[in-house]
Image 1: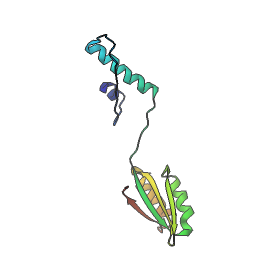
Image 2: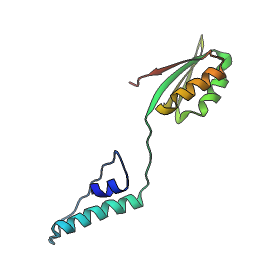
Image 3: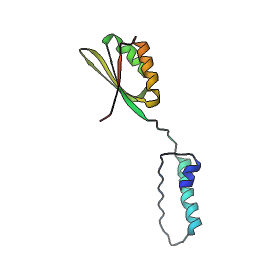
Image 4: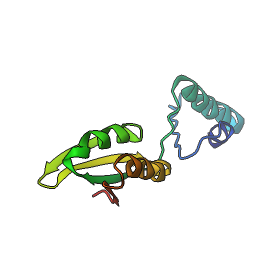
Length: 125
């Protein structure tokens, strides 16, 4: 089973195979073929999804920059991962962004808001 996962260059994957014993002994080679074949078929029928590590950014900006902040973040934020709150100081946007995109998102926000938006990385609770 592990050999099938390794040949497909998969990482951070677990495979489980259950065999109901029906009275026929398969032997070591038969078990290898049965289990490996089952994992290979499951992988063929399924789909592979790449998961990227993300982090949460909180962006604070004046009211006048709420629209430009949202438009800039649209290119970087994870789908359905953004919430917006307003207070007396302006807008506060909380969003999930891929870790490798954080420097680019920070720079894009800095340029789009003329360095008026404050960006901080937070840990999730």
